[in-house]
Length: 558
Image (cartoon, rainbow, N blue to C red; front, top):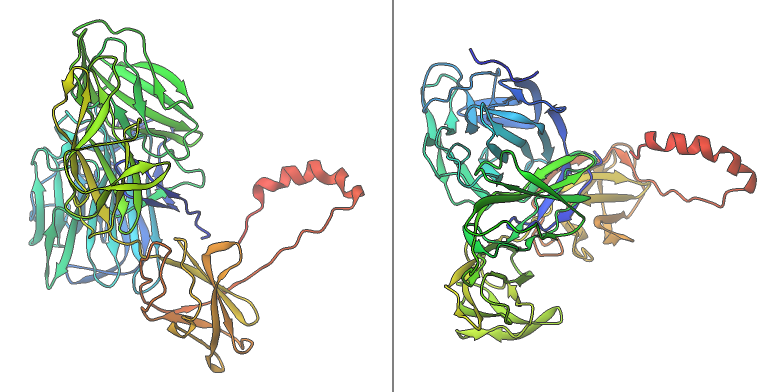
C-alpha cells in the first residue's frame, strides 16, 4: 500500500500566451485545492456536468474526478496503477485524460466548469500543477472537455514542464476511454513514451457505439481560474533548449498574464531539483553570475502572484568560451484572419550586429517586414533578410487554419557567418466562435453576454426568437451595448409579459474576429438588467467611509 504524502458572473480575460492559442479564462468551481502539501490518490465528486452526456450508450448528469487523471461516471476510484483498455477489473466507466501515479502539487488544484448554452455546452475539467508520485519531477497542467450533443471528448495538455523525464510524456500512462463494464473502450496510448507534449490535444469523436480519434487536434483555448487567476505560463525565449551559450548570458522569457513577479530557476539536475533561485522581480530577463566554462545546467522561470505559482517548461544549456551562433526555435499561435508580431532571437556568435534571414515561407498565410508595428513589404521570396534591427516580422493568418500552417524557417547572420537553420512553428486556430453566457432583461430589452468581443449585430435582430406568455415578441433592433462590446442589446416592439425565453438559429452574428455564433435553444431570461447611477455624496456621508471600506469586500454583483 502506498503511503499518502499528505494529507456566474464568470470573469473572462483574453490573453496571448507564448506557444498557446488565445485563452479565454473562466472562473471555475473547485473540486479540490491543495494548501501547501501534495494530495495523492483521492477521488472527488459527484459534481454536476451541467447537461446530459452520453458515454457508451448511457446517459450521465454527474461525474467524479481523481487525482490520478481520471474522469469517472457512476462512482469514483483511488486506483493509481494504470491498465490497458479494455480491462474488466476496476476501475471502469472512465475517461483517462492521463491515468498514472500522479498527485496534486502543494500549489495545485482540480477545477471544473460548464460553459456555453444548450445545445452546445462544454464541461471543462482541469488538473492544475500536477506532480509525479515519489519523484521530484514536475508534470504540469492538463484538461478534458466534454461536448454536449456531439458527446465528443477532447483531452489536452497545457504545459508539460520537464522535457527530459519520460513519465510526464506518457511512458507509464493510459490515455483513452472505457465503458461501464470494462468490456469495450477506445485506447489511444498505454505506457507509450513521448506521446504527450505541451499544447498537444487528442480528440475522441463519437461514431455510433464507439469513437474515432484525432491525435493532432486543435488545442482549445480555454482555461479555468480562480477569482484571482493563477499567473499565465511564462514563455521561455532564450537560451533555446540544448543551446551552447557564453559563461555569462542573459536569460529571457515572455510576460505571463496576471504575474506580479518572476523567479529564474537554475539547477544541475534535469528535473530542476535543488535549484538556485534568482528573483527577477517584474523583469522579463535576468543575467546570473558567471557559470564557468563547460558546465551543463537546466533552467526554467516561475511566474508568481498572490494565488500561486505557474511553472514554465525546463530547458537545458551548456556553457562555452566560444559559443556558436544559433537561432532560437519558437512556436506561436494565432487565430485565422489575425496578425501576430514575432521576434526572432539568437544565442552565441560574436559581439557584432545580428540579422535574421527567412529561408522558407509558410504553407498558408503570409510574412511581412515589420514597419513600426504594422505590415511592411510582403516577404514573397527566399532568402530574404529582415529589415527590422530587432529581428521582428509579422505573420498574417490569411489562409487556412491548422497546426503548422504558419511554419517557416530562418537563420541568423553575424560576422562569424550564418547559423544553422531553425524553425518557427506557426499554429493557426479556427475563428473564435463566441460562447453565449447568459441573458438579462429590462421592460422591453434583453442583454446577451458572450465570452468574446462581438461584431456589430445591427440588422440581424430577426435571427433571434423571443417569446413570453403572450406569444412571440418582435425583436425590433439589435446593437452592441454602449461601452460593453461583450454584450448585445436587443430591443423589443413591446413590453414583456411574464416569463421570457430567447433562442438563436445560427446565422451571421459573429465575434469581432469573425467566429460565428452557434445556435442555442430556448433559454429562460431570468436575470434583471440593471443600470446603477451614483450621485454625488453629501459631505456629511464621509463619516461612514471607514465602515463602507470594511463592507466592500463582501459586495457581490449579481
